[in-house]
Image (tube, rainbow, N blue to C red):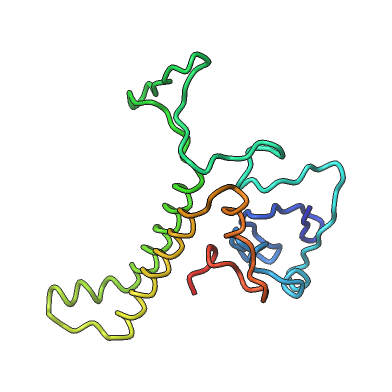
Length: 176
């Protein structure tokens, strides 16, 4: 269990420190001991709390599916969503994270989209540094998508989210 000045904070969840600073949800993956100390965050193992990573598990012993799961009743018949008229589905981890990574890449690309618009409207050249940066974002996203797609089981999938040996965040958490 993590605490900040006596207040419980959850791993893999965004939180706000007492001084009003908002920390992103990947703080547990990107921080080292110095960061924990700087932000007055302590960790203590609490025997009564069953820890599990809710990114990958519904509960301590129920893993989430890597693939989409269609909703069916006890007889194996499709459960139809009354709102949509289609069979319900729980999106699997692979599709969830691919969509998330594409959204992150699109957010990064959106910051330089005006160069593309200007090129189309005024035929003003896009600086090569911007083109290089945009290509790097697309390449990184495609690489991450390939890693997600190729994960053969939950352990392989979860390993994508582990920090590198040098303590840097994994490729899954940061584009740069």
